[in-house]
Amino acid sequence: MWNFERRGRAVGPVAAHVPAPGQRLAGSRFVTHYGPVPQFKPDHWDFRVFGATATRVNHSFTLKEVQGLPASRLSADLHCVSKWTVPENDWGGVLASDLLDIAPPAADVTHVMVWAEYGYSANLRLDDLADGRAILATHNHGERLSPEHGFPLRLVVPHLYGYKGPKWVRGMEYMTADRRGFWEERGYHNVGEVGREQRYSYQEEPGEGPVL
Image (cartoon, rainbow, N blue to C red; front, top):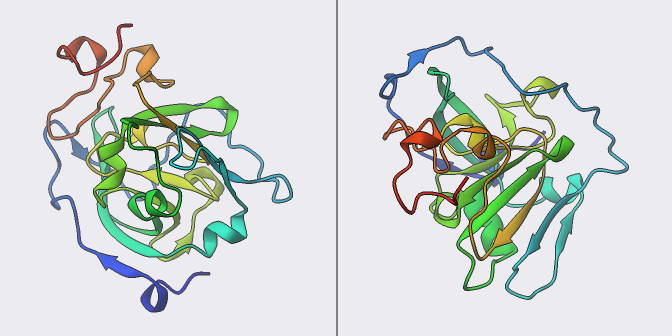
């Protein structure tokens, strides 16, 4: 288990301890996902950063190498687009902004596709990952993630709805143009900001997403 107090840096809360607009509180053990929980196969697991990288070279990390990256903590609420919020989560892992420094994107990258098991994907603006509010989590409340909560790696982006933060993450693809991920192709908002209640694609303003 990582020693976040020794190795990491604390990141302050990014969400208030009251429900966001349109949200209601749920218990801390609330869990939901699409499809079955994947079986973890350590000998075949890796995390890849590819696409339009700054060096045009793809990066690949074993789980041990991911665990050796700079560790941080982030306290934040977790918001589901179906209007429930799990408050005051203490996440431990690698800040997405730190990973961007370690495996940087090319200068013309604007968006990132985050890939997970079973081909699940979620597209995000590069800025959503670069500003220190997102974390590739390995721990929750000091404990290693359970399989149901995304072990060994999940993305948490507190200012966006949960479908923008996949569980069981396997890679990030740097993109020079936006394209929709799994749920974004199926009627969910392409941006998904919690504070603006951007839940569904019919709410999108011009420029907020590729044409469906």
